[in-house]
Image 1 (cartoon, one colour):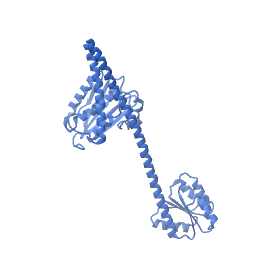
Image 2: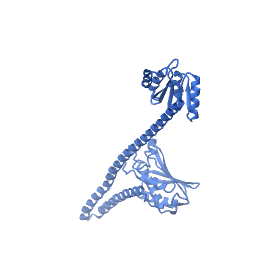
Image 3: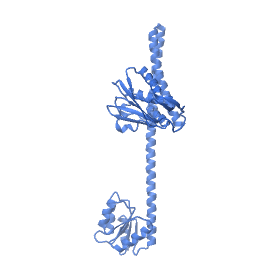
Image 4: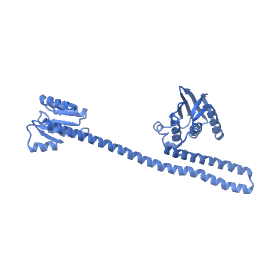
Length: 373
């Protein structure tokens, strides 16, 4: 928008009419004081400012405007009929003006200058937008590199832990075999197997994330019964966590079209996380219901919960809740993989949580007509 400042009504009207016929948005002020009030309230691309005015003259108005951070970069064109000497023109530039036009005004020249300032303004605005986008991209890539480095460090540690444990159990096995202590051999074998299972899960997650990144995560979709899958998952979890009571609230005695193994992977991830982040508790609830053409499944724990500002990021790649990263092991990719699996089924994932009261991780997927086959 352009602001014209002139104490002569005829000048205001004529200038305003010419600029508006060339599709410029125009505002007016009949004094320096009125102009300053308008500059404080509105944003202007250009101010056309008469030098000779009662009260504050144009130079004083320009100097005042240069003191406003909001309008400091606004272009100013001075108009003057009386002060045409070089010293006045110089004063105009030193007061913050970018141009000085003497009256009577050649409208063609004024229009040319206005269009030029507008073009400069648009180019400057675009450059600022490009600069901001570049800075945002740089910041994202720095952050991404830090996340990557952190992930590599965590992954190395997480993979090394079960490997070191297996190596230790193998050494203990050798000693027990030499002694013929079969019960101890069986005990060490079982513990080694547990660590190997953990290692296998970590490697499977790493392979999955690699396939997601390359677009090669495969799905084998067909009809299956959700409640049968859920019974099987609960039995698996009970075997490794017999102290936890897992209750199913609701029902979904219906067929689902999807990859049964991948959906099982998501539910197991939700359940194992619920158990991991619920020290001192012994109950998990699975909420299940069908609404319209969608299935809702939520896993509710009564553990540590998640801070509201971190809930939006829990499904991001490599994200680990800050206050739990040291206390609880993990790569920070299980939920990311789960979210990708659900999205590839045309569904959505989410979390509802209150710190200190627990969390409910959930997903919704269509019963049929998947997004992709």
